[in-house]
Length: 375
Image (cartoon, rainbow, N blue to C red):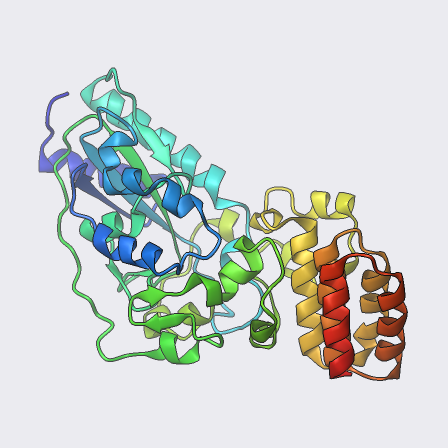
């Protein structure tokens, strides 16, 4: 398909803005990527249990193989920056307080692809959108396109928009004029994200050990959260914003104009107690159209048990005892035991001793024994 002029790229960027994207750029399909750094990250095992990162490594290194016939990638960013409460900690991560971004952004990228085809003609290889749904080195592409730079936290940072950004890509067969204007790294000597991470997940500038990251532990990890890291999770139920909350570039970032990404009251109002005691059907209903569905009911109840254990509030003991005795998921019963041991007291000890007799799952029994030592 024919090449296009820089003026068309400008027109494309204008159309992207009309569709709700606060930033847009274009890179060639063979744009240089930091694949060596990615390979080193994998080799060091810093991806934890995210085996899909390894499985599709070759596609990340060769974007053209992901959608054969593509010659350019349109990369976009949509802000979910809150208009207030920028420095709060805990609870549910800001990106998950609104509607799920995947379908919304993909729908808008489809419209952007239709615009391209209406302007320069149909192609045997139609545009293909991706929103966190394929092995794409999206941060490298966004940085190369001029949307920002990859900061020490590994988030993409923009002078105007900060780092509260959803990224998306549109692979197209046309050779679009690129916007190769990579922004300089403006992190400077700042190490706020590294210093403030409670689990020490940013092990060095630009390197995150996912195995220590609260977002990974509360969302991606399917099994038990390592006991040594549970206290540092604090009151985080789903994800974490600390490395973004403390970033100076987010202090004056423009709030999102997109109402769909603004907090939903029913999500924002969820407490650890709500999520611990919720039934499967209740969770199915409340999580519809929300990113919090990813860990499932059991994953969110597991996280809630950790948060309640960290609360220091012994009024949480009765619901934790209920979870220890009756939750169908072993991972929830185990974390409820840990929480009771952390809260301590005679009621906790009695419940743990009875549960040790009744429990037949060895992993939970191990948690109970450890909890009894803490009481």
